[in-house]
Image 1 (cartoon, helix red, strand yellow):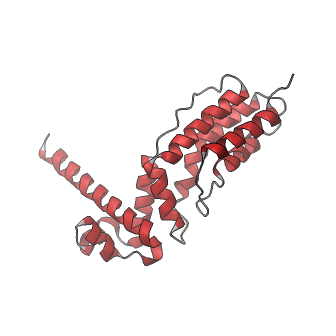
Image 2 (cartoon, one colour):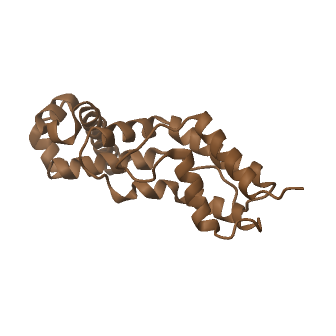
Image 3 (cartoon, helix red, strand yellow):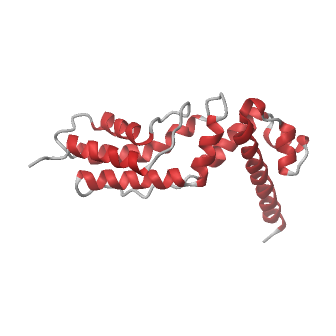
Length: 190
């Protein structure tokens, strides 16, 4: 490893450590009550170092939200929605549950719940792969005349809210209920 690469690696690790420390403070105190001094103390750096890396508290908050959004696992959904509708819905529900159980999801939810700020607009993008997959799955069923709208409705049933203003905990029971409702509503009956 050359000197430039080693220096970049140390800088990236230091930045990550500051983001992790700031995230903990935002989770406990929320945006309004979190102080740059508390975050600097938690990270083991000076306040000046935080300001040098992030500019101000709002930029640090956005950087922390962005960091955790990037840590969320990508859903392992196939490009084509194959199989019966219930199978497709269960596949999407399973991936939603895995994402919700990830540390990044927990951290994001806690940060957003304790802050009176609307998080980075990428919040909603985390649901786009699910929405696209569900649209493909639902478009194969004649009983579903508006697959885009139905995909969003499924996600709302499954996760409660797509907005960061009111994130909720996703449970297996909630996901199972959404799958059952949509399978009954749109799958072909014999």
